[in-house]
Amino acid sequence: MDLALPLWFEIGSLVTLTLILIADLLIILKRPHIPSTRESTLWVVFYVTLALIFAGLMWVFAGGEYAGQFIAGWLTEYSLSIDNLFVFVLIMSQFAVPRRYQQEVLMVGIIIALVLRGLFILAGAAIIENFLPIFYLFGVFLIWTAWRQAFPKDDHADVQKENLIVRMLRRTVDIAPEYDGAKLRTVYDGKKMWTPMIIVFVAIGATDLLFALDSIPAIFGITQSAFIVFTANIFALMGLRQLYFLLGGLLDRLRYLHYGIAFILAFIGVKLILHAAHENELPFINGGEHIEWIPDISTMMSLAVIVVAMSVATVASLIASARERRAAPGTSDDGVGPAPQVESAAETVADEKGTPPTVDTPPSPDEH
Image 1 (cartoon, rainbow, N blue to C red):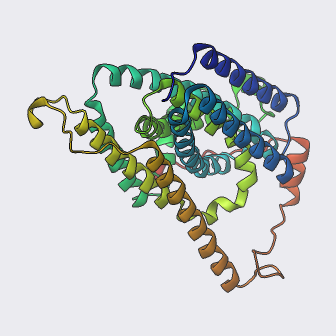
Image 2: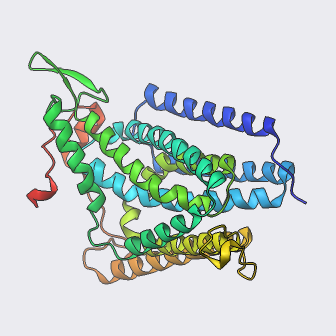
Image 3: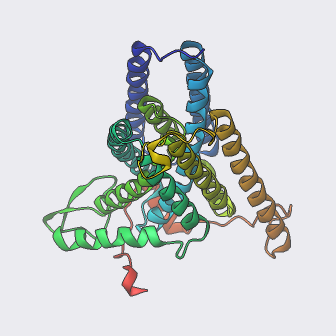
């Protein structure tokens, strides 16, 4: 029989994770650099191992159901966070953020995401506690989101929405045309101005807000424990910065990832609707009585569906990408990947010295 999570375990976990995040941030601020593949790999392995150890401790102190809910929630948030990376890549490229400062931008984005998701989690937990039929709405919303994810009308829709915010920001504040390291404020032509970094932070924050709208209802479909929801989000986001540099050019090879994510969202949406019907309280459905014959999907089944969906999407993507690279001209000598591309001399010097590039005003949606 599963037990409840001890209060000391919850408090101790949150304090420990906060300290880890602060230490990670201080390391970035002290030594901004472009992490190597080896460094990024070690950090990703560290955070994944830490999440598995945390799940093991939950199993010991609270039982398998709690541990299973955490693993399923963590994997769901991790897969959705990988989807975030596609948009982060677009933002970094659009605003020409020097690579040596991209770690700081990502870390700030992660902190913004944690704050926003924390607020969403508190609101969601309060709503669920007082109005269980909200699961019907969550379920329908996730199924609609899954359809939009699988069949997007515009791959850059989210970025275009963010551009609207950026254009409003440009109209209201003075922004210098160049970066000044990772600073938010600088002096340009004798005038105190914001640097383009403020626009990047606003764009990342807007992106985090949009993704939180999808991810929080999804994980509440797996567990109603606010503690598990929040810690799953923390662990998913903590390794996101290193994963960004580790995957790098691999992101464009994961062409079927959005189908896997869409399937997971649709599955959780159906699960939420079934759970809402099983615990029905709406008077116009079954006379306000529970619909007992409708089953509740177990945590273990949810975990299996999540793992299989992401595995199939990833393997299918890599196989399709490998076939294309073998068939395409200009591949490397071993025929495995594309011929390596060399950065321009100006880009290399700018990244090594931290010289901020000139940033053009990004095109707005109505300019396309």
